[in-house]
Length: 493
Image 1 (cartoon, helix red, strand yellow):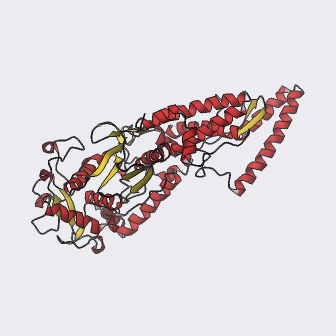
Image 2 (tube, rainbow, N blue to C red):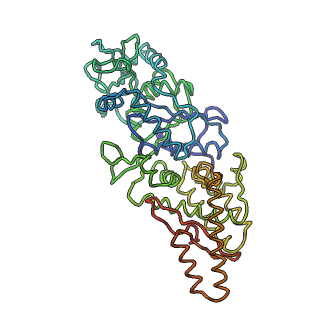
Image 3 (spheres, rainbow, N blue to C red):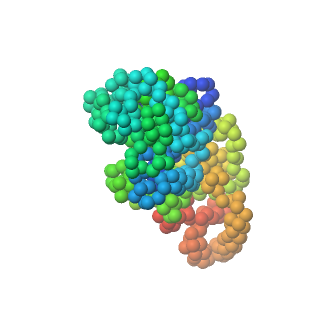
């Protein structure tokens, strides 16, 4: 089976065929940096990071990923005014918080991350083209606003499958100069209470870009007139993506060939957002949750499925991560786990069932099922003393989990390369091995009560013991998403 993706525009699974053989151009709408990011914001980046990794590892594509930063819009100006600070200081601070959150969760850096404020000439050029073609017009009241004429483009509404007559009025600008209330703003004339440095000159007047125009211009600048994939959250499908597509194609651009949208993170059935008071900031969650656990939580559901957050969500993710880590820890005590050095080597390690799931519109739940089944089989091999089979399973688990960005052996998560951490681990191992020696002596003397006491003492400080044909093994009982200890990983298999 070749890679099939659900295209929002056609509302069906389509075989993915890139515009240019061996290469993929992908644009995803980044955040409007009006505040610190919460996990509802960040889910899109994790979802499309998995897509990018699968395109690169699973299909050997050279991916150019553009993820924009909307650093100027109504919300940014309003938030800055409320806080009494410069708008550019507010947006830059939140841009840095967003970058830190993405780095912490193992999201690979974009090929380029353009800011809207750096592309005003591209926006003005696109706007002039639309005016010249009769698809846009300056407001007749001299306000400096420029609007897209939705009735001039018969395909308007095709992306979101709506009839123009059924749409509500666009609320992105004062309707006084509009021919139709559904016309949307390409450019917004400067208001008297807005900062001078938040506006730019154009042939139509001084002002700033509308949100929709920004993305069309940036996508065109860095990916060309036509590119392969445009992605973002499902809430952006209308009006943002609908408007992007209309203005770009009305200007004569091919624009996106495939549209992909990820679903929300909800709390009690409501979309997560600051206005609902249920936002969970990434930086706050990472104070009590391991980054790999939060990454797993945001990755585990299918990207088009809603994630319902509840107090036990991260505990469930932590238990799953622990099972993977516990097995890899056990396997590493038997020998070196093979780590794929390139895409070809990684593909050779991927089970057919895993590949099939990922090629079916990024079926991550099915792919994770293959990972955990391989973990179970690997633990059985360890229990049976079959080190070769166990290490083979470990290599496959590492390769599969790397595709999803949750490989515990990846440098992003591993601390074993740190000198201080290695010294601590070696010291702990020596102490535990000494206690295991005492326990073994007690068992040989048939003092089983003493042997159990030693095991219980170790368990009380978070060290789990597993008896295997080749001798006892120990592992740390890691903390779960709430910061409390879990049972030792990988022992139920």
